[in-house]
Length: 122
Image (cartoon, rainbow, N blue to C red):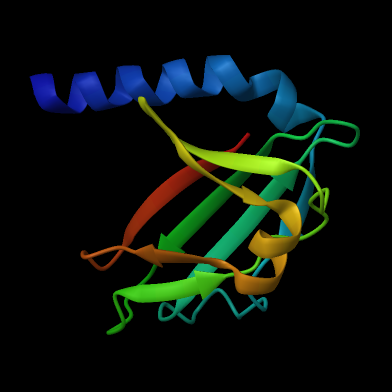
């Protein structure tokens, strides 16, 4: 279907834009590891390339009744201001310091079970 093709195009474009960053990044688990048989809860992973300020947060809501969850990024530069970028959109009207993001976290809302969101911290 056309909708699936368009979504696939967007995913490929995202990967092309970020592939070098992803290949050189370290991953921080923002949730505890669980057995692969466990299908509930949330999973969050932060990718960070050493020496760069950009971060990618991958957040997944599995089969969980809660539609909201707060995650705390790690290893941000405390004094830097970060803005959020979602694929296809930049939200730079508000900036938060690395210290605030690490201490207060970022709340995610995913209405649908088994859904995901990618957020770029720039």
